[in-house]
Image 1 (cartoon, rainbow, N blue to C red):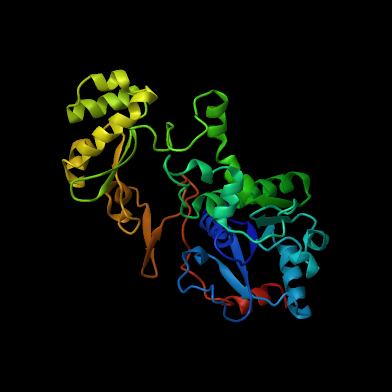
Image 2: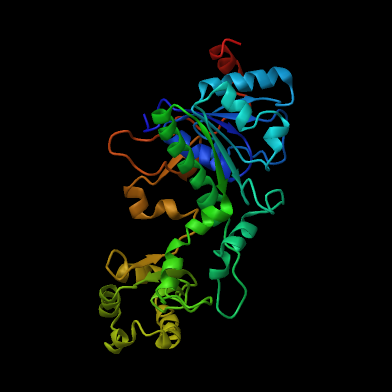
Length: 361
């Protein structure tokens, strides 16, 4: 039984970060009921990991009968969340005001890219647009090229799905004290901006240059970056602190002048070129044998489809197999209320009869 056992959350199924937030909550023991749209959607994917551990009922919220089922479900839930454009739920007369009349204690989560208000609120967009506006994208990429488009982890999942799950749990805790529900406005722009807090701090302390690819953590420093190995694979080095760089120097046989230049940005470019040559003298396995598990802050760069094979991930059972599909295990780990995946991804409308029976409908 996970730490959210006994909590019921309704998920108005959308794409990407919404189902991800629902999966996180289900992994932690919450009963997450996915409110699917009837019929087939081109976005439906067989075995979608984000649907694991949930229940499903398909409802047409434009149908009076299904609206009654939805509102009845709301009276039994601690929270619900949706990821539609602002105003969509209001047009259905199922916005926060209507739902809070049915259940004054419910927490109503709303996640969009731009937020519920502001001049861009009704515009279309995707992760790359949201992290553009927050400043996160500008910081990623080489100094002599355009910003690099990352996977949609920063806006959609970090700034969106995780902030939504966090906000819902915060809202549920507050409602149990106050007896009152409320709406939560999750903006991926603001969520990804919050993730940039440390860089605002570094800038304020004059420890971050206002440009890309020349700083401590953006690939500018020789001791924090990625390097190709002799066999065409890649390794990561993160020896920021002097004692960790010293461990790297001791293991690799570099001379002590490296420590004298360690925190001198003027030397970083030349030292990085030397490290590129050095890393190509050994295969990734040879580097791992030399540096793996030491204080040199080294790790092999693994494809995500091979990460489950690393001895550390094996020892921690960081990956599991559900219905024949390998996938990340629930995280974080709890010492007493251990999270678990109760079952694999659900089919659409699989729990309709059981849910209606529970509602007395």
